[in-house]
Image (tube, rainbow, N blue to C red; front, top):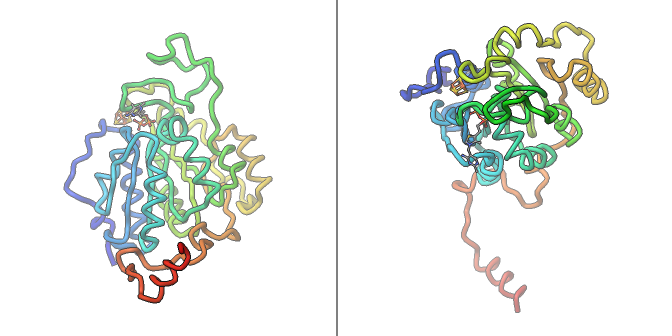
Amino acid sequence: MATFKEFRNNVKPNWCPGCGDFSVQAAIQRAAANVGLEPEGLAVISGIGCSGRISGYVNAYGLHGIHGRALPIAQGVKLANRELTVIASGGDGDGFAIGMGHTVHAIRRNIDLTYIVMDNQIYGLTKGQTSPRSAEGFKTKSTPEGSIESTLSPLEIAMSAGATFIAQSFSSDLKQLTALIEAGLNHKGFSLINVFSPCVTFNKVNTYDWFKENIVNLEQFPDYDPSNRIAAMNKIMETNGMLTGLIYQNKQRQAYESMISGFKPEGLANQELSLSQDQFDKLLTEFK
Ligand SMILES: Cc1ncc(C[n+]2csc(CCOP(=O)(O)OP(=O)(O)O)c2C)c(N)n1
Ligand code: SF4
């Protein structure tokens, strides 16, 4: 069985020292080992952004895709080879701005993959513009007088889009983050894991200390039941989306690919793709 070190490669991340994304990288590597994966059984597909670089920093199959398009690619990978465990990842801009249409439909489609968003509440790679996750009044180069748009709540959107797994964590809490990624990898369906991952260079408001002061850990509520959809929505709203832990899980709904008629469990590479003479003749008669 592979250890977490086998999910490391020799590429040195060029994230700024202190960037929250380092811990997300470590948590992915630990979780992959803990659930018994091998590097050749994992694909990490990312969008564009500082966070999007993560696909190059894990020893696994990887693709550093297009801004906002990690999910279409990841879904294609999973459908083409369901033997692979697929992680999609990117920033809050990637997933909740340009890629939001894909995010909503991937959630409701429920293909078995784990989507990890590194939510630093700003655009990092392009040097600090307001993202849909930025608070009202947030001042950046793109909003010098403060943002006048309301903040988007990805957890509420995911709940209403029919998500079967929603979790949130903080990059400083490596233990919780690793456990939640493991749970996401084990979930049979689409898992959204939103991670507060501070941008130490451009976001001087939502700092490590700010998150520590504002996060509400679900551990504080021992009676909380993540299978209760209404309770989950209430808790998200009560805490203004700042809660961490496993927020909601529906184990009843089957993953999309399990319901496609005629869909084979083997990856395309392992399937017999040529038609028998009989199948070929039948196909021809359909078009006569
Ligand atoms: C189609 C397209 N539009 C815009 C960009 C420019 N761009 C690159 S990354 C990015 C946003 C980065 O923010 P986020 O996705 O939150 O990731 P972070 O860098 O903060 O990790 C933008 C707007 C692009 N590369 N492609
Ligand atoms: S700019 Fe921000 S998000 Fe990008 S690597 Fe630096 S700290 Fe991380």
